[in-house]
Image 1 (spheres, rainbow, N blue to C red):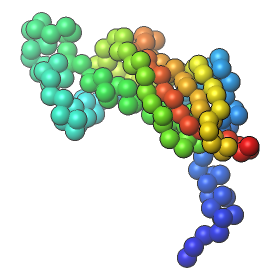
Image 2: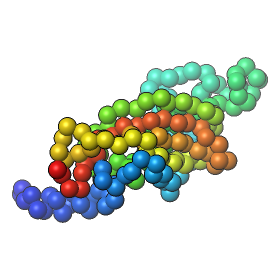
Image 3: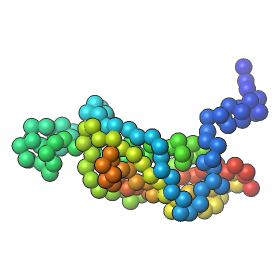
Image 4: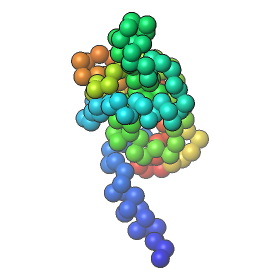
Amino acid sequence: MKLSKDELEKIYSNITGKSNFFEDFEVGDVIEHSRGRTVTEMDNVMFTLLTMNTASIHFNEDMMKKGKGLFPERVVYGGLVTSIVVGLTSEDISENAICDIGYYNARHINPVFHGDTLYARSEVIEKRDSDRPDAGIVKFKIIGINQKGETVVEIEREVLLRRRNPK
């Protein structure tokens, strides 16, 4: 069975955000993302093994407790922190994305530990037309915050977003 263009559009309109097209963002907009995510020990172990980052700071609790590291306990891998924070923003800023163009200027400001809950905020820092009549480019500054209100990560994300009304 092959779906018609109208049937596909109906399905597509139900799985993407109604207000996160290129036209819906303006420079200076700030989006407080409503979801949060608690990071577990298993998250950290699985992600660090998956990415082959087996640094002791992520795995050796004994070493950390004996003061042989920068922190008193194991630290969640920064790649996982960044991935979770970007994921928390996706529903609000990139449901209508054609693709990510790039990620820039990532900074890990404070450590994240097992049991910390992460939240995200995005600010529109740039918006411009693209070569495509059906899309434009929006750059966001994404800020990850823990349950204490401390900034843990900042990263810029540039996204090619669909236009609601192509030119």
